[in-house]
Length: 218
Image 1 (cartoon, rainbow, N blue to C red):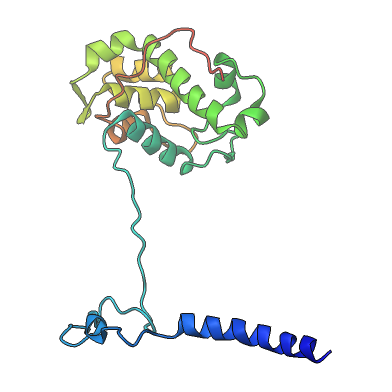
Image 2 (cartoon, rainbow, N blue to C red):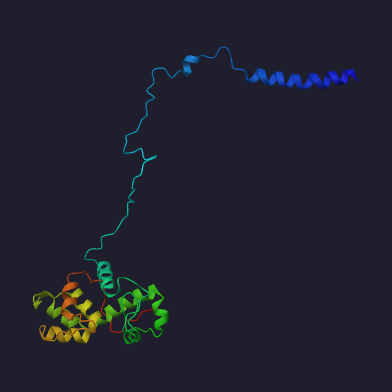
């Protein structure tokens, strides 16, 4: 019994002693190797970087692409004028979406469900391109004949013609051009063909291919 008691005491003590000796720092350790003497430990940062504890407005770096006179710039500028770029708006006359299409124009483009059109941004974008292609085909001779000329002080360009056709239809644009500005159609809100000719002049719309039968298909 006594032998067992001694064994039970000595065994844990021996283990603890071995661990203590293993962890005890060596007396031969050279402290000079770990000295910080002579080192420059002053890492104070400038006041403009020390934001902790200061009330300061942090302005995020927001990237805004410059579309310029590109076709994308043309589309977005026209959309902003039509609806402020809102895909889901309907105006007081029932015109729909980002580019404010009427139901009859949509039918020409193969779209017979206005509600589905209103809630489908991709379809609206395709409808815009298809409509521009149809208008460019209808007005192809007038674009060639009048581009670069001035009517009523406004330089006629392809993009201005296509924008005006979006507003008033290609027939009204033909009448305006061939009457040299005398027949200046205005929509229900008073916006004229001439105004769109000037507002959207000089954009690059060469990407639009004239197509008499263009449709908007997903």
